[in-house]
Length: 312
Image 1 (cartoon, rainbow, N blue to C red):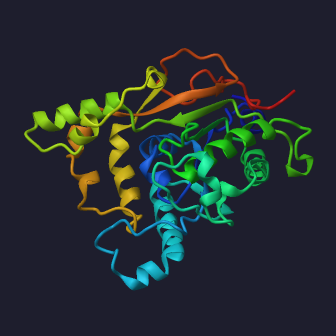
Image 2: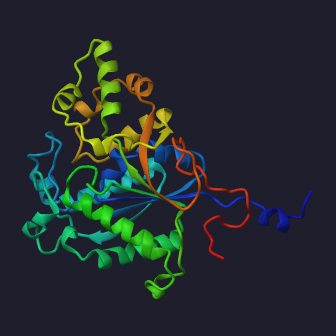
Image 3: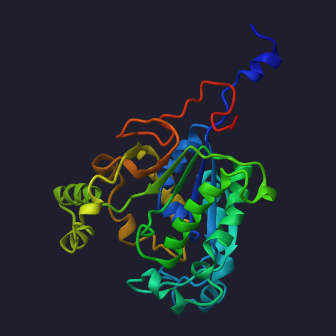
């Protein structure tokens, strides 16, 4: 048996995952079950929240007319995030930017119509700097965020994408922000793709087969197929047994989610059987991997006691 000092040196380094989100509640509505799965497996998970959701609305109709809630929404949303963080078992950091608010059918050409102090109007390189610092201190092997359209066209989601991708590049460059810590090369970046047609079709068909009204039918009736969306999902992470944790974390955001609303209207067993994964698109990879994947860490060799992301 090796001496304790040698045994410690041979231990495999912990896997580290960073999820970058725009607002408090996004970490619970997008990828939370896979987060819970990885936490249960000993992965260190850091959620980075770009804004405080200050300009969001109270979306839960039970609270929408509560003047105290409306007046204190920024503080309440932080408290909700604290609770969701505990439920998911994660670390969480705020980047400290101000919510941009929501514009219907937003495009980046409309950015000047947004408030002067908002996240979407901050220079991308400047907004990336605090995230570079977090990447270099936390040293994630994998980063998740939204695609170039923000998952849906919210100004903060699109900016979250831009800032994350800029920070991914800068964090690995020793010449960029030399006072922000030692350079760190994350090995993979994923876009979270929960809202895609194949998943909605499966959930819709399973719900109708169970004799229930489906909340997905109208979405599918209005769905516009786009060639660029074909084959985007590269990675399906099995995490059905963690769907209850996902829902518990989402319920923590009471100002944003009605626990009696459609989001929780589909029985858990139908969700778990019809679509038992959370889905991602591999956007950047510094390692060889085989598509399709079933693990965000696929292709990363953790067998060496040295950190697989460490630069020579």
